Amino acid sequence: MIKIAVSGASGRMGQTIIEAIGLSDQAILGVAIDYGDSLDDFIDSFDVLIDFTRPEATIGYLNSCKRLGKSMVIGTTGFDDEQLKLINKTATDIPIVFAPNMSAGVNLTLKLLEKASKVIGEDSDIEIVEAHHKHKVDSPSGTALKMGEVIANALGRNLSECAVYGRQGIEEPRDRKTIGFSTIRGGDIVGEHTVSFFMEGERVEITHKASSRMTFANGAIRASLWLKDKSKGLFTMEDVLGLEDI
Image (tube, rainbow, N blue to C red; front, side, top):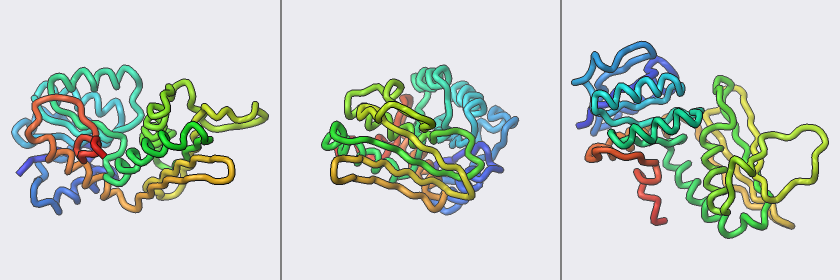
């Protein structure tokens, strides 16, 4: 039985993770904390921390987990380059699963996007549209950016050079080498992502829609259990789900 700590416990995602742990027969809730609480006070209460908070809070918990020798599952998005470097560096000391989306369906979608990009990507205008609830503060979503990264890598492109974030006014005709992003925020949408490959006379659309945060929570618990025998390293949900050979 693995003991899990949950940060951001009073938030929407934190509450969902706690509910999911209660339904698991392989994990128990060790401690639930909110911003300002110190993990040092609960060193014997958990084996792994699941964190879906904000970048600045996550970095604080990251440092604590390193100091305490605890594993970490990170679903937070919106990190800057320096914070990402710190996550990578810390993974040389403790095991970390870091993914912008813990859903098994989304991670399977990423694999499908890689395959589609290799087959039709060079002949397509590629657009990514994502929609989330009105409270989400980062855009595009971490999942949308990951989708763009997977597509760009499959096509031998650099996402930072080919991404176009929204369009306004009069522009030059669309460059086929670009990857477009559009963002929708409103209501209580849990998460929707559609990637369209527009070709002459046809288009292929790959869509994932989440109707409950429970899918992310279950993925995070699965990642926590997978880390049980890991001593250090940075891993993704592709590793957890065994998708690398598909």
